[in-house]
Amino acid sequence: MKLAFSTLGVPGLPLPDVVRLARSDGWDGVELRVHPEEPLHLGSPAAERRAAARLFASAGVSVLGVAGYARAAADGPDGPVLAELGALARLAADVGAPHVRVFPGGGSGTTAARRLAAVAPLAQSLGVRLLLETHDARPRGRDVLRILALVGHRAVGALWDVLHTWRAGEAPAESLAALAPHLGYVQVKDVASREDVTPVRLGAGALPLAECVRTAGRRSEWLCWEYERRWFAEAEEFGAVSGAGLACLRRLTAGEG
Image 1 (cartoon, rainbow, N blue to C red):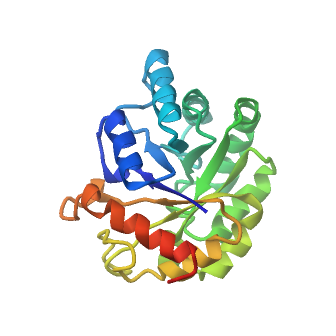
Image 2 (image 1 turned 30 degrees about the horizontal axis):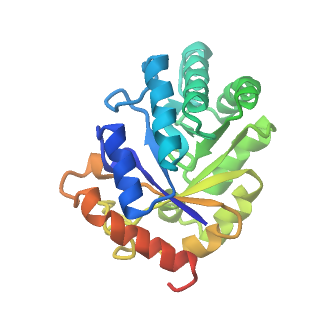
């Protein structure tokens, strides 16, 4: 199994430093957060996108996906959401990423499905998959599955965030059963408790990480550690926990946890 980290843990870090961190600790890839405060985002010009693609490719570090903030079921007209989804797919293709993270949002599942289906042919033509995350008002695998069943297109799949399914009371085996036919990759993390989601070192918190990793390994090629330090300034810096986190995931994927 291949292992990646999300740049949500190192917000604003220049891309050459992201690459150095990945190589020094031995990560296989990264998930690039593409919020406007990051070095790469939807407004980045073509030259910067090409430079980013060359940087990661030359270092042998895969760009697993771009983590966007589009909400497929957002209230309001379709136009802005469709434009954002299309822009994310193009950005992913430009930097060589096979996946785009999409949030469901809290609106109608039918609306989300219609919009995702509308952008699916573009994503497919670019060699990219839009992955709907277990998040927002759809925290469980079964919630995301209801939308994906309406879409019915291979270019639209699922991103399993194990924190949200666990907090919603869905067992890892249930999540996998719902998402397996559509699964792109899996985000892992660890937190203080169900009520306190302050990020902690992998294996040091309350989340049943070993069970999640063991279950995910049946269908997912990639695990991505989403260390949410951007929202929790009191958490340790990612650089201080990166190596230990990678070692933990390697033990768990080897069946030693």
